[in-house]
Image (cartoon, rainbow, N blue to C red; front, side, top):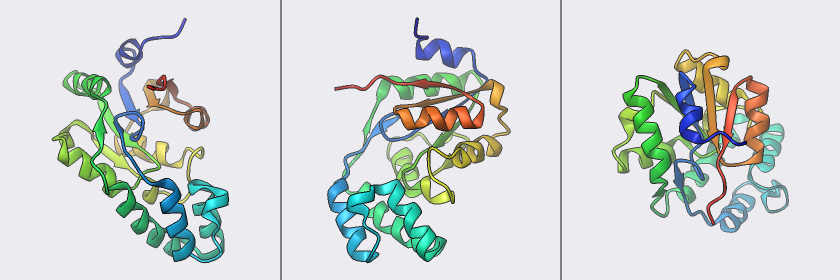
Length: 187
């Protein structure tokens, strides 16, 4: 039987949340973003590779500086429309914070997108650390970002829960040695 999110949080001393699809839903014109990145970074082939693999290929070919420049384009697309809060998940986060638990966000989304959204929804004080895709050299399912968020908050793996919305995050959690709760897709 699947453990409910509230029970999983209750059993944890620290929680790391994914952002898009977990705390918020953001609407991004992904095909338009990939097309723009292909124009901005000739030879990248984001249309074929997708965002994460495209960023990895760009970094291999042109280095970390090119990826940071690409993330500036990503930030414009991610911030174009207001994010929709997933109120039940945010309420779980607020309750966990009130109980003294350490909370962080790790997401493939840009740090700027996350911080702006938290500010727009008066949530800055709820999370102790935010790690975005532009804060790490290796993207999901590599656990670098999750481990970085945990390190900022002095979280230990056996006491940490990763709350996310996708199968890729299972691999990330397992590689970091933390428990995970994957949210069911809301349709």
